[in-house]
Picture 1 (cartoon, rainbow, N blue to C red):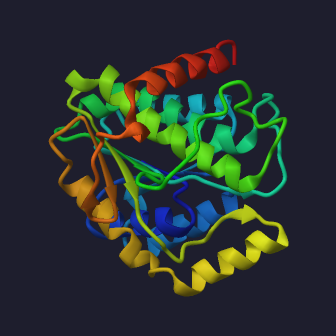
Picture 2 (cartoon, helix red, strand yellow):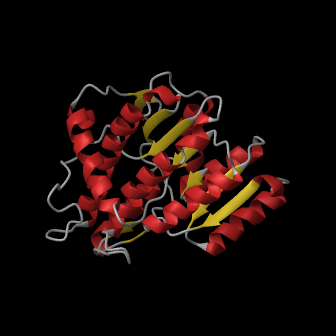
Length: 271
């Protein structure tokens, strides 16, 4: 299963997996792009192994619906790859009252990771690959204002989501260490992917530069494929491209991971 699988690296990964004979479920919000993916699968002879679930993953309710659909339709999940992201220069609050970037790029990954544990546990070598930003310096979580209502900036929101995902990996591995599920935090480096988002002029210019000088998407997904094919032995690992990085630093501290886990459950309570 691939969240954010109708665009960029997620789509390239999905099509690669189909060519190898895998069954693939992609989740995305754009029905048109979902149909394009299904058409591409059909044209390659993989029609019966390609599935699209339309969902707005910035909504807690939609993530829970996706978990139910996957659990009912695919009782064994070998790999969950988390790619969904969307940059917003202007702060947006979802219909459920949550800041969009935090909801999409962190809470969705939390809900899908934990929600699909039963299906992952049934696989022979289950792995979650969270395509985020380990190895990049990030500020602390804005504990008193995770929705950044007092001082929003698109880059700040992205960095906070990245920090939250590092801590998600720590908390998940601690909670499910005996499950056999391997949690991998992976930074693919500079990739000329789709960069889904709504950008101000300055950020848009930076994104265009990244597109010009980034690696091709097909190269960018290679470390993801490698981790899916051969999950590390440890419950938690982190990579920048193919290079493993140490977990023995502040970015993977169990104390803020536990604090974020408690905050997350409070935010999700009643939603």
